[in-house]
Length: 157
Image (tube, rainbow, N blue to C red; front, side, top):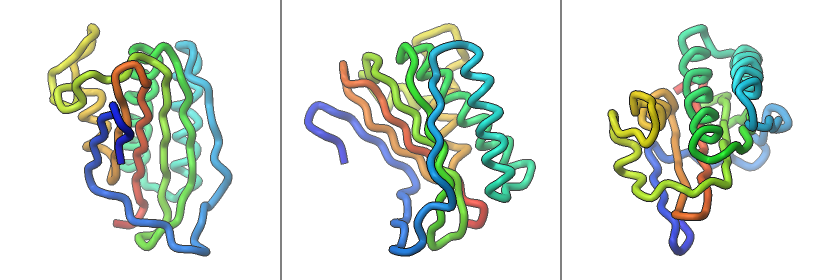
C-alpha cells in the first residue's frame, strides 16, 4: 500500500508467508555505490539462485532483473542497496530482491514501466523488463522519496 504522496504498483501479488515457513536464510544486503558494486551484486545473486535451486534459465532471469534494478538504483537513485533473501511460501522456495535508493523517486511510475521510456541513455527496458522476469514485483516510490522495488521469483510456480 502506498503512503501519502507515494506511488505504488504491484503485479502478480505475493502470497503471504505462512507462520513457520519463514526464511531459508538470513537476508544479505549489498551496497550499490560504484560500478564494481554492480558486478558484486550480480555474482551474489547468481550464487543465491544456485543455492535456492533455480535452473540455469531462471538463474539468468533473476540475475538479469537484479542487474537492471541495481543499475537503476546506481544511475537514477545515486546509489542504494540490494538485499537478497531466500524465502519459503506455499509455492515452494524462492528468492526475494529488495532494491532501495534515496534518489528523487519516480515521478510517473506507469510511464517508467513502459518499454522504450528512458530518462537516460539506455533502451528503456530495465524496470519493465525486470518486472516481466520476476513472479512478483512491487514498486514503492514518490517524488523526493526514493524508490523501493521488491521482486520475487519462485523455484516452483
